[in-house]
Length: 275
Image (cartoon, rainbow, N blue to C red; front, side, top):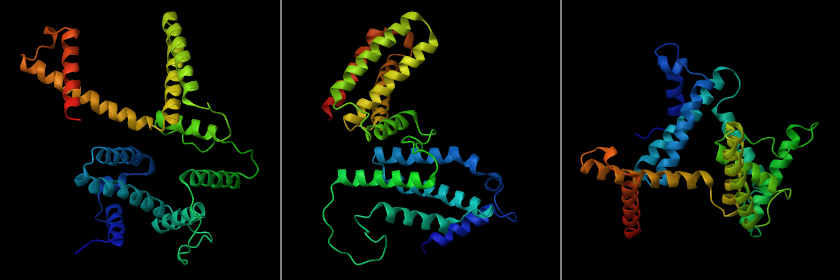
């Protein structure tokens, strides 16, 4: 027997049922589930980046269950249900892919369409989203940055802000200008550190990070992904150092920074041999 979508929807209803349901599931609301949703998203990302395909299926299921949970809560409050979510999603995707569905109809004859480049698709997508934003607030001036969620991770939101601003020409023409800006921000950070004013240091540190995200965007590097990769690299190399310390008795105080750094370089050399 293979369970289907309707089985999952029924399971969710049973979990939330006042009679015989799960006390934990019944106690949840939209706000209380948000931390779990974020956790599930990162677990999916982690499984993909580690190419752990065996666990990815389960992690995707956990993430999908979050959608089912929100849909159940909304249905109980008379707002919408899971089928409304599906319908709104299909309608939006049809509208945003006119190069595939020219009549905004899902089941239509497959006709040969002129080839469209990735860049053209991106421009079309943003133009459609701009129109949607104007339709949602017809009596207000369109703000280009208005719908970028403040709850996004800082690096991701910085990239989205910069990308949106670049669409109207507010951008460096090439990476060299961004590198110059980074050097300028480093000098300003040095001055802030010399002043000893913590608020100024934090402000300049933020400017430097923002400029670095801008460079990532120009180089077509996702800053979150790059940082996660470096985090994993740091963890691997630090684990190697820790193994050496433990082999020598486990007392970190016996080793100078120079000795620890030598093991760090040894870990780097090991990695190069396995590349």
